[in-house]
Image 1 (tube, rainbow, N blue to C red):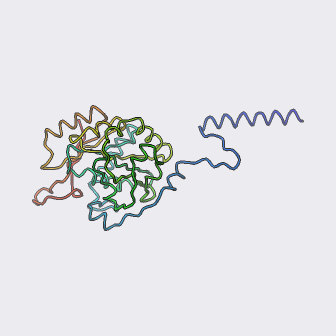
Image 2: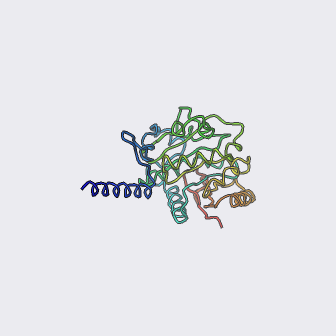
Image 3: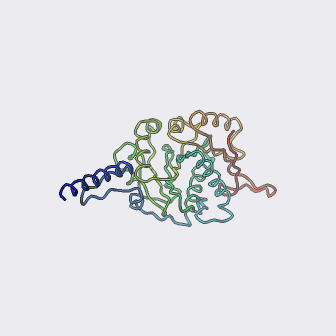
Length: 281
């Protein structure tokens, strides 16, 4: 009987070791709780943006409707292409300043948040001119650069605005953004964010391509990119140059024509009223 019990115990131990290896989850010691991505996500600091502030800053996608429709089309097209390729890291950039890339990023983020099964993390990496905290109305001085440098934990620099949408923002411009965005630490941070929070989509608000080398430095860390251009502002030459720069570093998901006027009404609309989405060749 003793030999039988010993054999059973040995077989049980071997089976548990195999299951533990297959699942990739380490065994927990008595009294130890293994942190899971969902737990980490739920533990993020919660911030509720003011609806009027978002509207004043042309963030119109918290609810579905006519104003959110163009961004919803962009969301669906982006998700379809990213899903087919197994991509999750999406950069948003532009040829130059004033094209509305940060506003497009914000609207795309809130549009994604209306997909309950998609967890989205947005990171402000336009480190010379960070805008996402201002657009959110977030007054707390979160600094994503501290997480990049390793002087603070990633979770301390992230706020969750709803069940499935969170932002990593910064308020203080830095003098060495290119060095931060192409160093080993940024790659380590992204891997840690994916491990700890398991986002389905990571959106990066990057600097304009033609202003500095910051975006070019970071783009190899992404799966794909959207280029935001402005009607009557971005030239065909700029678009062509920037598309080639993007294609050399990552996959070009498409080109968005922003700040369009509706045909026939003669009125120029802002970021939230109509823009074309053209897949890159």
